[in-house]
Length: 223
Image (cartoon, rainbow, N blue to C red; front, side, top):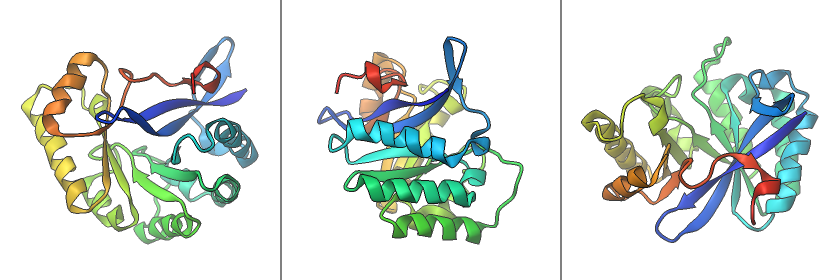
């Protein structure tokens, strides 16, 4: 059994939910865990689960964010399913989060860009997840930024405390990069109240993390 869990993306300063990230989970026994082989799933399952979520969040948030790695991005069946969902959900917008995951296949940069353009033509938006990690290197981000409306920096990927100067420097760098390119910047990995208060020093309004909400089935959410 598969189900999307949701996690809020919040604006800290006006205390609003700006969107939800959808995280696909698979049930094994009584537990739910991440899906490790997303591309083996029939696209219809993915589409049906997104629609179930969207029907309950309809008109409450401007966008729903769906993760794809590069192999999934280049799978036309998945692409067609997501485009079909977008047509059903307007005015709610589907946002594609291009993850940092390494994949076995190598894709040309121009092919990736052409696929992003196809989504954009359908009224969807693009986010680059976990910049500075995996395949979402700075060079890759620079190549894709013209087609992007958001970048995300995840504290949890670096194995060091946010109080380390080098981590703070990377936050400041990517915050400035986003401002320069006029895209939204989201800081992920806010785990507790102390980190949340510390991040206030960096003038970052859009945030995500366990401190605000852990991923969970929508039935548990008080909308």
